[in-house]
Amino acid sequence: MGTIAVLGSTGSVGTQTLEVARRLDLDVVGLAAGRNVDLLIAQAAEFRPRLISCEPDVADSLRPHLPADTLLVTGQAGAEEVATLEVDTVVAAITGMAGLRPTAAALAAGRHVALANKEAMVVAGPLMRDLAARHGAVITPVDSEHSALHQCLLGEPRAAVASLVLTASGGPFRTGPADLAGVTPEQALRHPNWSMGPKVTVDSATLFNKGLEVLEAHFLFDVPLSAIEVVVHPQSLVHGMVRFVDGSVKALLGPADMRLPIMYALTGRSGGLDTAPLPLRGEWTFEEPDHDRFPSLKLAYLAGEMGDLAPAYLNAADEVAVEAFLAHRLPFSAIPEVLRRTLEAARPGDLTWDGLFAADERARALASEMVERLARAHAGSA
Image (cartoon, rainbow, N blue to C red; front, side):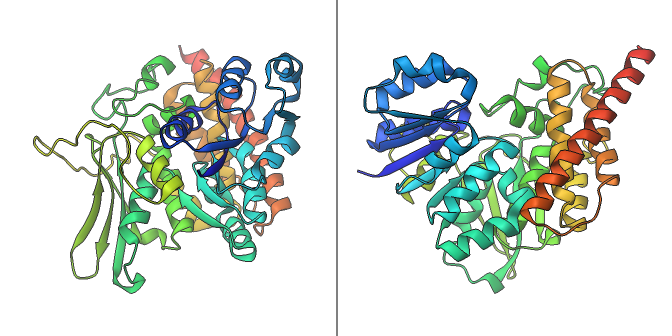
């Protein structure tokens, strides 16, 4: 029986990871979550992990309901303790910057990390790769697109690779409405194909999620940004492709089901889940992204070209802007404007851990100021 620890166990990827663990009869040794006490209690009762981490302010509500042999730890240090448990795989599924330190802790402990926290590679890719190299850790991507690329690249000489191709569904607003200023969070959260958390779903609607994936692929596979393509594939059946210098293309196809890349990351194989068969009939389409309608994708390429701390500025700005949009404080169409202005204000600096977190803090302050200005301007024009 394999052993795992799940960081972000109550989130979308975390809960689907536990579905796979249940099917494969894996031993869930540790769980790290935030404040979803009810779900964490249910997970603890079923999997009986040795260690659970939660936010300090909900610990008293959680503690009386845990199995007698389960230890409770809290906060950032608690999540890092779960991340360094002696297990076969640590699933890093805490979203956003909050997942960076636990992911780094797992790599520093030499663990195999099934990486679902794309921000870890986006803002700290060189640092994460250095940790993995120095401590003998292994990173296997969980994102469906990067899992597809990882599988397509296996056994292929790098000199034969011409480019990587990421597919995007296009999100809920691919074909309309023409004016995106008035779309609501409820509309943005109705993704046509995938079941994901709110942040990722909104990022998919702006195509910024694909921008993050471009940066993740850049650092994860050590491929130039100019050799990473994005195509819109509304059917979400082709998850990733690799172009080779001889003109051939290798692709990975499959249902739009996150449990498939999760299982591959945990086991290194496909099969074992009862998913609907892939339809091999019908129309499969591929389109160029509409950069005028969805400018956030190009901003991600720009941040990657700027390098160093620029991706951290862009990522922080997006977290602030999406939170404001979900709270009905910022129009959907203003999200890329917050990203653009924050990136323009980015200070140059070397990518170090201290520099990274300082840049993140400054970017959040800048983005918050811009959100307030844009919100006031939007209210004044309404």
